[in-house]
Amino acid sequence: MFRSPLAAAAVVALLAGCVNIAGPSAEPSSTPASATSTPSTTPTATATAIPTATSAPTLTAAPTATAAPTATAAPTPAPTDDPGFDQRDVQFLDDLGDPTGHCTTSPAQNPPVYPVDCWGVGANDGGSIAYVDGALRFETSAPGSWLYSYRPADSASATMRVIGDFYPTNGGRFGPLCAAGDDGLFGAVVGTDGSWAFVKIGHSGPEDLFGEQSAGLDVVAGGSNLVALECAGTATGALRLTLWLGESGPVATWTQPNGPQNFDRAGTYVDASSDGFSVEMDNVVAFGSGIADGSYTPEGEDLLAHIPEDWQPSCYPGLRPPYLAFTAEAVVTCFLSSTNADGAEIAEYASFSTAADMEDAYQRRIDTFGTGDGISSCEFGSGEGSYTMGGVESGRTLCVEQFAGIRFDWTDTRLNILSTLIDFDGDYSATFDDWIIAGPGL
Image 1: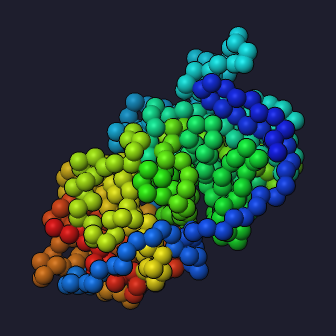
Image 2: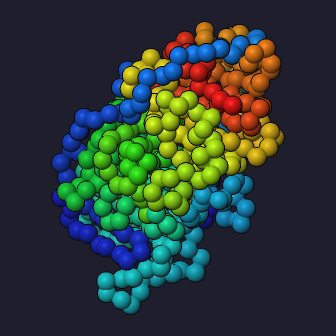
Image 3: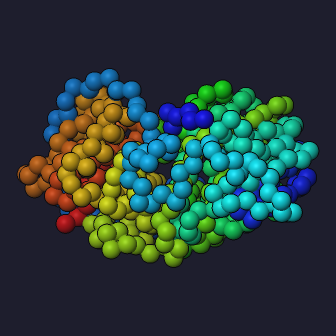
């Protein structure tokens, strides 16, 4: 079946996939650390002071704002050889169809040994996980019960992104995981009550690291919810997590100094707050850098050199394509300093082989977020238009609201680089100050 827009009671360990099913447990605890989210949250990571601006780009008057077109689907797997996006960093693409039945047919071994392209399944008093009608179904048995399942990736990666379509009933939470071995499971969940949280799954059960109960996310019970999680392991300098829901832009980030160095499997976590809560997961794609030590490719090194030097320690190699794009030659993502509380929390740079590819990715931002209110300068509000450097037109800039705060997206026709700044606090003036010095530099 393909449906796309996009204290444990028992443990069943499988050689390939893995499943953990638990009955009702105590409310997860909350541990303070560093995180970013919707307005009024502390920014992530640590970096040196932002350099002093040299020359400010000038943004020409933006055209009159128009209604935002209906958003297209974010990159999701499809049951074809060509899903429509760059697959160079894809670890696996799984529509959960299991056409040969090798994931759903119990093998003779005890304990069972499943193929490496299967998710863990099983059942006990806490609930069940099973392949059902072309999806992976998580059935909880009672409020407070929780489940997770994962399957291996092709290789260990310091950076991983997991995207899936989730179809929940009412009364619970669900979302992707990045995992290192049988331990080191970190994830992000969204709730049918509109909440979100970053979670860690350990031997004693789940722990909420940070979240917002009253976030107001548009989570659809009974419908499709595209949820994405990007994870950067400590091999990149710190553990860094980013959550997306559909095409809302990043919802929140989390960072901490310790954690897995890299990730070698993707998973899903579910917990129940009401009776009869279940989730079906379909169309999962896992991206991975395939580089375990967090080092950059030659293309990534070249891209990093165009990023402000004082920002570079807060950056890590991103994945191709970046979210809301179909192609890229290299991606670098930066969690900016907590000293930058008055500006952007996230910066992303993506280099493209052609100007046409860059412009297509930029247009996708416009298609998703619209063109704002037509303000002539991003310093004062939202708009879209061309900008100049030293009196020479150098690209276009989009400054606009997203679900959590604001975003600046801009092209650089000199280098074919599309860059993004995300400010969860929604401060146009402060983010404009960052944009002035963000580059990319020649």
